[in-house]
Length: 362
Image (cartoon, rainbow, N blue to C red; front, side, top):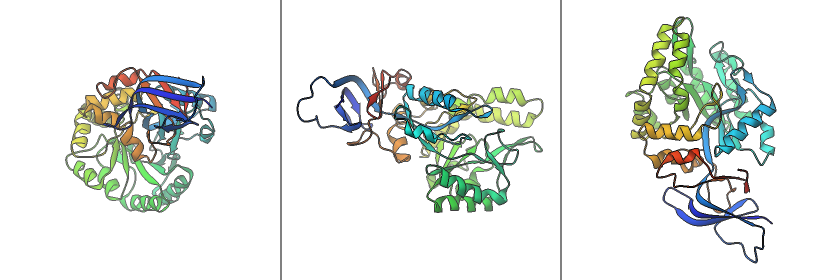
C-alpha cells in the first residue's frame, strides 16, 4: 500500500490550517496510519489546498463544435495540471462520460448540452429549439446531466441588431419548474440586462457571465440567493468581439463595450450585495483551458478580498456543487504550492504538486 504524507500547511478551510494529512487508499485522513510504514511513503511538502474548481468550462468542444476524444483528453489534462480538479461543464455537444472512468483526469459535473433559441447561439453547440419545446428539452438534459441544465438566456437578435432575451417568461417558468422536479438546477448564459429579472423570478439557480446586472437586479439576485459565475477572463474578449461585429451590428458592439467597461464594478457590486460568486473560465470554444488561476486573479482585481476569491474556487465552490474538500475520508484531490495562496492568489498559477485520487500526477 502506497501512502502519501502531505506536510507543511494544509488549508482544510479558510481558517482551519493543519500541519499534515495522510492519504491512504486514495482518501484523506488526519490520523497517522497504524503500524510500520516502511519505504512506501511518499512525502509532499508545501501549502495544500483542495483541488481547484472551474465552475464554467467546456470539455469536448472547440470554436467549431464537438471535438474527438484525444482533444478532449488534452483539454482535461491542461485543466488538471493547472490545479483544476473539479469542473462544472456548462454545456458540451460531446459525450465525455468516458472521462469518468479515468482516475487521472478531473472530475466533471455536466450540464448536458446547451439549450438555445433557433439561430441564436454559436453554430454546432446547442439544441436549437423554439419556446414550445423548451420544457421537453430541459427535461431531457436534466436526465442526461449531473444535476445541472444550461440555457442560453440571451444572444444577439440579428433583426434588432443587439442582445435580446431568448425565451418568453411563461416557458422559462415551466422549464425551470420541470428541472427542479427532476432534481436538477438550472443556469443560463446571460450577457445583457433584459433577461435577468424573468430568469430570477422564474427560479433560476445561477447565471453565467451576468455582465448585465444593474442596481435594479442585484438586490433581486441577493434576495433569491442566485449565484453568478462572472468568467472575467472571457469578458476580457468583448472589445475584440465588438470590433469584429462593429460594421454589421454597431448597436450590439457598443453594448458589448459598455458591459466590458463596467465588468469589475458589476462583480464587486454583486459581491458587496451578498450574491454568491464562483470561479469559472469559460474554457473551451475560443478560450484555452488551464485559466483557473487567471480567473481568481481577475476576481481579486475586481475588488473581491483575496481569501474570498480563493474560496470561490475551493471551499465555497465545492460546497455549492455538493462535493467534498479536504474532510476526513474525502477523495484526496489537492494541490500543493510553495507559498500561502491566501496572501497572494497569484501563487495559484504555479502549482508545485497536483494530487488526484490520492496519486501525484504532477
